[in-house]
Image (cartoon, rainbow, N blue to C red; front, side, top):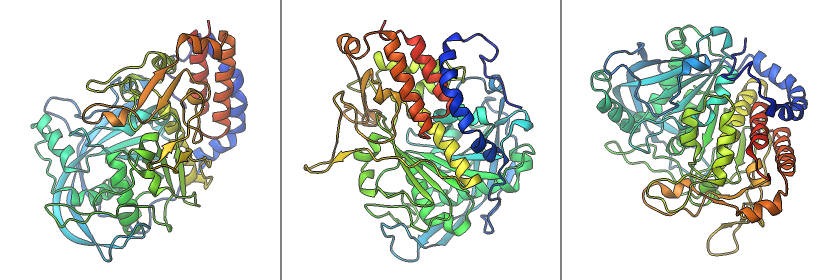
Length: 500
């Protein structure tokens, strides 16, 4: 039984055109979707991590889960949220040999320390809606507290397809900030340091399998996937190369916005073990890895030097017109899947928001739609063996002293995963060029086209809608946009008034 979206049953005539264009895609992918929902998954791996003690659900204190994530009522979309403590002894690791750039690392446990951390669980309220897959996100602590950027970016796909999501406080910064925010609720939390974060993340995945009766309220997971964005992606890079071969807890990985290196394998107060200046994923991966990169990541964060060719267990998607962080980090917190965010996002390209302290309007690209597809593609890959689509790389000119993107006549990068925002543009979208303090450089820029340029490109509304719709259908057919998101995008163009 599928959940009704908040606008189900209401008249939305602007989506009639979208439905007519997307229906063939739905029919064309029906067999793959059926295979996804009916797959058996790989099941628990033969080797496993330690299984922690699970207690909860956690209550008390101020009465609310402390986490930067979506802000709308999950009950309104048929989901429920709960929180649990995990306790046990976690191990740190040291390399058996120097860590090389090829990622084929061999590590061994070094020391053990007790810990108590927390996990946050979002799951379908109706057990019949659960699709059997659990997405475990390494919560991001770049801002000094736990945040769930992957849940924010991809929650629409996760909710409409019935995934369970688990956010893990794997790092000391997040645990400390959470405990400070509500000392009563989180009095039991204790973290020995980030050298132990990798094993804590392994044990969180193991708890999803071994303690599903508690963690998932009796839902039975068939596939467990790991997600991480930005700083968490750096740590997942190290985890995939060093830790996954030891325990094989996770069936697949979505690594979003990594840089050229990995996070340290060990760090103070334990031994300092940094990774090499360039880190690639090991060639003998034991689980599928899908890497999604923004323009910012490729050049500003240096992942260009760590580029790899696609392989049987590795896919790389570099997404044109996107930044490491963008306007959807704000819009996504209130996007309840009703379909209105598509129009809001399109309008934002014409009147982009600013971020305090940053010199230019921030990026308003459509990375979140591609991330929706990445969740689907990784899950299907693990369940059925059907790999994600191969994507061309962003075109980079390396003839000068520093690499630079090759741009089209509108100022948008050539190549990569394409969305309507760059193929039928109303603005120049970049992951580079932002100025200002702190994290500003991660937010990219949006430069709206002038009214004169828009009129020249789209002399009437019908022309804009037709071009935008055609680009959307191409993206869906190529395997980079989900049909539901394609319908939202075409509905947004129809409602936009661009060209009127």
